[in-house]
Amino acid sequence: MFKARVHVTLKPSILDPKGKASLGALRNLGYDAIKNVRIGKMIELDIDAATEEEAVKAAELAAQKLLANEVMEDFEIQIMEGVS
Amino acid sequence: MAKFAVIVFPGSNCDHDAYHAIRHVMGAEATFVWHKETALGNVDAVIVPGGFSYGDYLRSGAIARFSPIMQEVVAFANKGGLVMGICNGFQILLEAGLLPGAMLANEKLKFSCKQIYLRTEQTDTPFTNALQPGQAIQIPIAHGEGNYTAPEETIKEIEGNGQVVFRYCDALGNVNPEANPNGSIRNIAGICNNNRNVLGMMPHPERACEMSLGSEDGRLIFRSVLNSLEHA
Image (tube, rainbow over all chains, first blue to last red; front, side, top):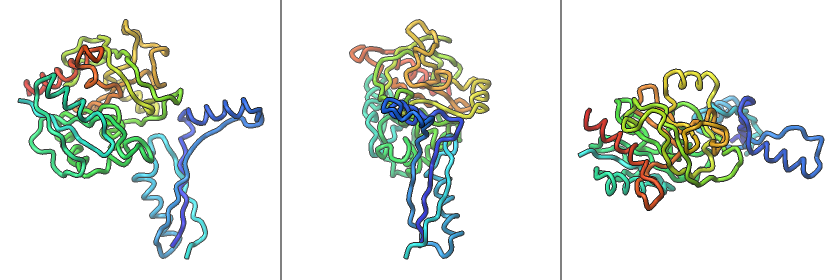
């Protein structure tokens, strides 16, 4: 069993209204060092696979098919330490 | 008599509005089709209605797009059948790949529910043949994620093919940034596919079919569909 994290982010060319609003709030709080905010999502998957390679493959297929919309989003797969 | 299927997902909430507009206002036939069904039955057109299918989990329309009936809707569209996605229905058609592009959260991050105007950009579609070129129609919007986006090359392609059917405008038909309620690229409010038999629009024509609701302009869109079915 593997635990995978799928990080879904908006493509750099896509404006991120939620990130922009959060940046505005951070500015109001005085966090002037923060120059940009991009908001994405992190999805955790428990995957029954024999090898890490197999787990990555399964997570990739899930991301391409459903978890990310590649018209506007990119995704990255991160395999956490093997569970069980 | 023309018969419309109105698809019902868990979380659809404009299905009855669409049914009412088609049946009681336009006098055509309508039937609800539950999303678990695997056949549309003998229908002439399909409405994918507004609402919050699957609570908008993951992304608007992302999960509904895999409901069993959607395979049939895609097959129906690919055979040239008329499919109209309204609001969440538009988002579902984007996710299903029947229309190009995607939806982001509204630029100002607020759910926007108000009367707006649309400029008719294309009249040679089965959904707009009863409208005049450039005609401004009053139709309400009600959405939080209607900020249409697509890669630059896709925008060029749909503009070049005349697939942008409606743009947000003011009451006089002027398309300007002030009339854009959600930040959509080029004020895009509705698009069709290259074959012109699939339409997606964020505004709700089914909520603009009676003067008691503020406008009857939505009838022109349903009238167009009925016209094209009669002449088919």
